[in-house]
Length: 69
Image: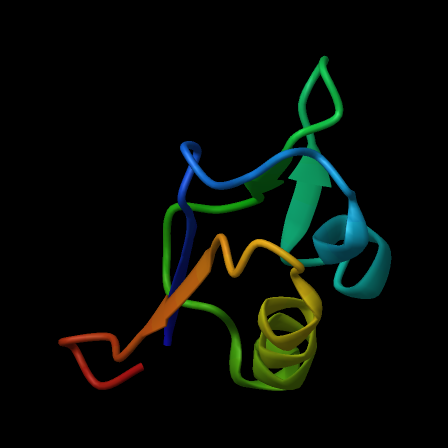
């Protein structure tokens, strides 16, 4: 699974990095950022899903990793 944040939708609630700090972090202005530009590790997928489902703006995009990860 890959994860991204739509910067046009994110307003900086911070739920993503509070719920899944191993997948997301905040930038200098408090907006969510994806921690790594690589597929989400299998043991972190649930946290990424929980953060995506909790985002009020639905700014978190989850997608299948084309390499199968």
